[in-house]
Image (cartoon, rainbow, N blue to C red):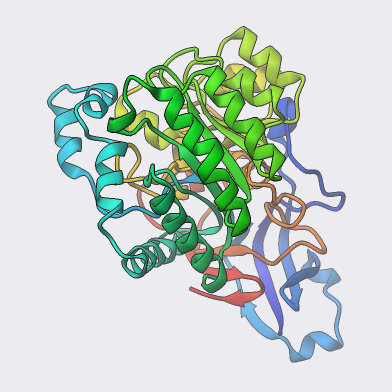
Length: 414
């Protein structure tokens, strides 16, 4: 199938010499072409440029979309979600309103443990159908790639159940999906007081079975106060690496946990949350290939301190942003909202914010070689906006869907 998008008001995030991510001052670089065309063939971007330079010939047989007054962006890449879950948790939301902390809710059996209990009771088919609806929802807001974690199982059987559902989603959804094994998301109630025994289960039972069925691209650990220690984390990451699972880390959401340094030490693709990030953490990240990933939805929903994104960028770091879509601490997968939060709450310029939710978040899920920007040879995952006046309008006009059409793998899906 061939497709021509013509009369594009502005083609955004174009690259003639593609890079894997943008860091520091380079995060302000956002290449655009006004009055542009984009040509797609066999699911890939094969040409783009100014309308005056549009080639003729074989384009005559293409599906033609007139984008007059509209802009074209690369689709969002959401590099951190938990969108396979058994039920919503709005009652805990009310508990938060009444003053209970995230940790207090967890200690009394709420939070992750609440979802784990319900996960054991739900069928794979129900999980799959519910998750597919959520994928359709986030697609409509411009997401074209998403990472999905397990972690609401906390037993070998239910962790495998979640990962099998994610595998089915990969096979049947037009989105690009990566799967992450997060057996170390919380400590089950029956293992409280003997945490090391549960870590042994993760290492000796879960990881080998996940690897045997080839269910995970990455391995993750919640390394933070009240959850898994640095020692626990390193043991789990070492075990995962033996099976080819690349590390990703939940780090420093609740305190200075050492999770960022542990992630860097073991070559984590990303370290995520990062509310507590100081000079030592920034220094460690500067000497690494690990992508710092901030999750604005969680900090906003939980009323937490915000990660020092501005300080990190000014120090020369790249920053990615993702939704953390989950039922307990960030019940939204709307990446347009994350884009707005990047500017409103974290003081990123629109250019920096767009890089954070496209190219850098593609890097954070290991796909920036084929997604995250408009470049020849990259996969045609993009969205066409409604009529909007400027690029800056995308983060500025928050709360409404500014996407008109979604194209994934070169095909119109919305």
